[in-house]
Image (cartoon, rainbow, N blue to C red; front, side):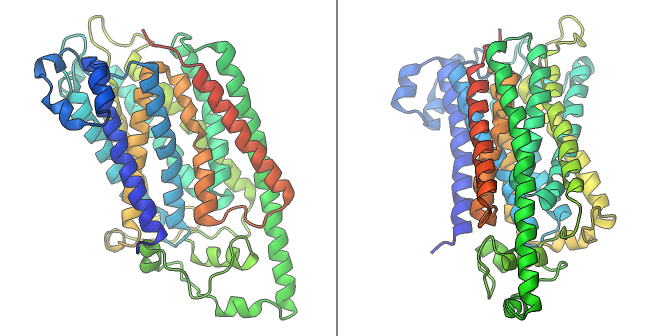
Length: 468
C-alpha cells in the first residue's frame, strides 16, 4: 500500500497532466471554435491531433475567453500554493535549501521550455503573431521586451529564494500570506494602470483592500502563534527541570543537521518515537531535524526577509506585462509584441540562471546559519530529490498558466492566484502540523485571515476584463 506521501505525489503529477490537457482542450475550443466537439470529448487530445491542419493554421493559440482565463488561474492557484509546501517539507527533514532549490530550478526551466515548444508552436506563424521559434530569431528587433522579461525573472528568483529562508523563521502559512498580500497591493495596482484599466476599478481595489487587511491579520497570526510556541517550550522546560518529559527527549530520534533520513522523506516512515503535532516535543524534534536552526532567532529577521520577498514578487508580473504588451512603446513600429510563450521562456531562463549562480555560491558560503556543502555533496544527495523536481514542475506550470490567464483577462485580475496561502495553509496543517494545539486567539485570527483571502480572491476575479 502506498504511503501518504506517495499518494500526494501521484495526485500532483495527475493534476499537472490534467492542466496540460485543459490547455489542449482550450485550443480545440478557441482556435478551432468547434464547441460541439468540445462538449462530446472535453479532454481528448487525439481528437485535436486528427483535426485538419489547415484549420489549426489560422493563428497562434492564445487564451481569449474569460472562462478559459479563470480555468488557467484556478490551476495556477493550486500549483503555486503547493510547491512552497514541498520545499518546506524537505527543509524540515534536513535537506539543505541550496540542494533543493538547484533541483527545483531544473524542472522549473524544463516546464517553461515544454510549454513554449508545444503550445507556443501551435498555429501558423504570421508577421502579426509569430510563434515561439520565430520570435527566438527576432531578438535583434524585440530585445527591449526581452530585457523586461529577463528583469521579471531576476526579481522572481530573488523573491522565491527569500521566501525559502523566511519559511524557516515564520512558518509557511504566514510567509505566504504576507508575500502574497504585498504582491497584490503593489503588483495589482501597477498592472491595472499598465493594462489601460481593462479591469473594473470599483471592484478591483476593494479586493486589494481586503489583501491589505490580510497582511495585518497574517502578522497577528504569526505573533499569536509565536507566543503559543514560547508558552509550550517554557512549560516543557519547567517540566524537564522537575524530571517530567525528559524521557521523551532522551529517547526521541535525533537527526544530525548534516545527514538526511532518505527513507523517511521518500516513504513517509515516521521516527521511532513520534511526538504529537503541536506539542513542545514535536517542535523540538522538528528543530533537531531541519536544515536551518531558528530557535532563539529574532522574529524580526523572518519578517524582514518576508517583506523583502513580497516587494520582489510584486514586480515580476508588471515586468512580464511590459514584455508582452509594450505599454511603454519600447519596440520600433511594425515589430510584433513578444508572445506570452517567448516571454515566459526568456523569463524562466534568467530566473534559472540567477538561481543557479546564487545557490552554487550558497553551497560554499551559506547564509542564515545554513550548513555548508559542496557540488559533490549536492550531486550525491538523492534524498528528497524527487519532491524538489516535482516542486519545480508545479511552479513552472503554475507561472505559465498565470501568465496565459493574465494575457486574456488582465494581469491585475490574474493576481488572484496570489491567494495561494489558502492552499499552502492547507498543506501546512496536513504535512507540518502548523497551528495544532494553538490558542483560541490564534485560531480566530487564522480563520479571519483565510476568510479575508477568500473574499479578496472572489472580488479580484469578478473584476476580470477582456484584452482587446
